Image (cartoon, rainbow, N blue to C red):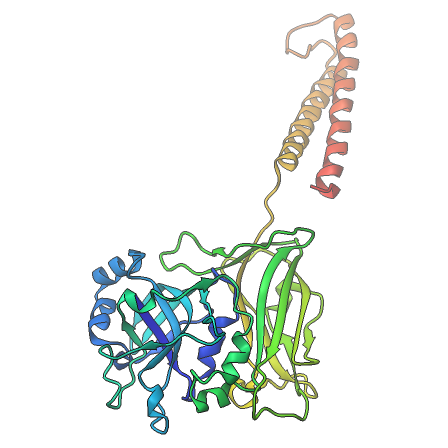
Length: 395
């Protein structure tokens, strides 16, 4: 087991919260970027060796991690040896160039304790936190997590704990307090009750990403909620921001491109319809913008409002079996009509020729031609009827 963490009392504290915004089974929309010295040396050696990395990623026991929070502020040394687990993760890809790019899939949330507080894991003997260090990714004994429970949905008091639970340092709590958190609760096809399950968006690729597979032309309800983390120190002057849709608008129809923030919490459904199939995944984005300036994007850290970026792929609508049958009938009927029409024409111009090409009496020719004409008319009528249903029918 390993831990994947961010310093909550540092400048990148929003990375502690962003992976909490998405349903279980989704990929986080971007990799975590780590310098090599952020990773414990033994684990780094595994990640840098292609053979060892492949074995690591395919081992369900080793490739089981906990994403969470660490602290490094010298002013609160009692927190430096503490890790606060928030959610289980599974690595899907690790790229090493100038830095490590660690991609992962989100799993269950870590439950709160019976006292409705965060669990903590002591890093004694794992990291030498008494000295200045910056380890954010390290392997830990599985026994460290034995007492933890997990749940598919975020715990009820999670957002309150981020502002008030003293398991977190004072500086971390001050960062989180007042932050507006958008969350994707679920995605359902309109008219259906069962939510969509995140799936691999490109199964043929070696590096897998997981999100929602949508079909062009269908309508989907995105159930989106937001919370304002209540706590001491947040702005009491009122909320100055909204969420604006910033997905590729030319490829999607949407109920409205702005979600107004009117209080400390809210949940509503917004329908989205993909217009066309896409060759690769895209992100549907709802980002924070200033209420009074439509195009001004809020700063996540300074303005304390996070964005929602949902990985999806839209696929072209496949013809159902019934429509394929109609298409076959249309093609066959027009071919039959043309063949019958051709022989009827030949008999009219050359009365001595039968339908089989042999010599015939005038009586045989005159009796065969009306039959061919009737059959051709039948084929044309069939073609016309099925073509109309093929183009305009509800399949």
